[in-house]
Image (cartoon, rainbow, N blue to C red; front, side, top):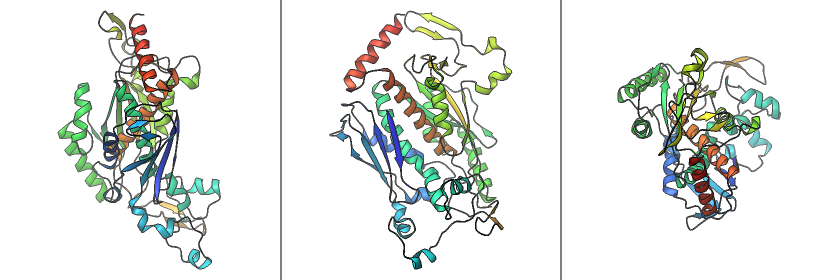
Length: 388
C-alpha cells in the first residue's frame, strides 16, 4: 500500500490517493468523518478550525460503500479558499497584479521550513513554501489513516490515542486500557483526568495571553495487533522503525519512544525485558509490556504503545527575530494565523500515522486482492501462531 497527498493550506482543496487497498472492504464514511472532526478539536486551536468543516468526498475507488481494489481518491475542500482565491489561484498574474500582490512573505519564521525551503526551490515569496509545509496537510493524512482504520476495525484491531502532557502538566495516572480508550474523547485536551484537563486549559490560556505557544507528549495504543508484523531480517523492514519515521514526519514532532522508551536507559535489564508466559487460552504473552509491543522490530501481540513529543508551534503572536531575504535587514518574523497549542489535534494525527503503518504491514504480509481473501489468511495465520 502506498499513498500520496497534495494541496496547499489556503488552496482550493486537499487530496490524497491511496493505492493497494483490497477490494470488497466495507467503508463506514460517517466513522471516517468523525476521525477528521477529532483532528479539528482541542483547546487552544486557532480560528481556522471554526472556518473549515473538513468533510471529504471519495473521488474514486469506492462504489456502493465498498472498495473496488483500484486507487482510492479522497478530497477535502478548503472552505477558506474563497478568501484567498486571488492570492492562491492557479492562473498567471499580470505584472500589475504581481506588483500589488498582498501577503508576499520575505521574512522567514524561525522553526519553520520557510528559509531552507526558499533556498532549496529558489523561491522569493516564502508563501510558496509555507502553504505546503503547513500542518493543514495533515488533514489529508488523517483521512488516509481513517481509511486504514476501517481495515484494522474489520480485522478486530482497535486504535486510540491520548495526550500525556501539555507543557508542565502531566497526566500520569495508572489508567486501564479502557479508560485511555474512551475518556480522551470527552476531554478538551484529550487527557484522561478531568483535573489535569482543567490544569492544561489554564496553562494554555496563560501561554496564549503571552503570545507564546506550548508543546507536549502524546500516546498511541494499538490493541490486539497481529503478532509478527514487521521483520528482524532487514533494518528497513522493522515496523517500529517505520512507525517512528512516520511520526517524525508529522509537523513539529521531534522524538518517538516505545513502551517505557528512554526510561530503559536508566533501568536495569532485568526490569526492562518482558518475561514470556504461556497459557492454553492466551497462548504466548508477556508478563509486562515495557518494550511497547515490539521485539526485534516485530509486533509481539501485546498492545503497541507509542509515545511522541511535539515541540511548541513556531508561529508566535510574539514573533521572534528573523532576517528579510530581500534586504537582509533584521525584522520580527511574519505572523500567520496559528494555534497556541495543537497537541490534542496532533495526538489524532499521530494515531492515524500509526494506523497507516499498521495497515501497510498487514497488507505487505498477507494476500489482499480481495478483503475476504485477506480475512481468511489472517485467520489461518492467527490459528497457526496460537498453536506454535
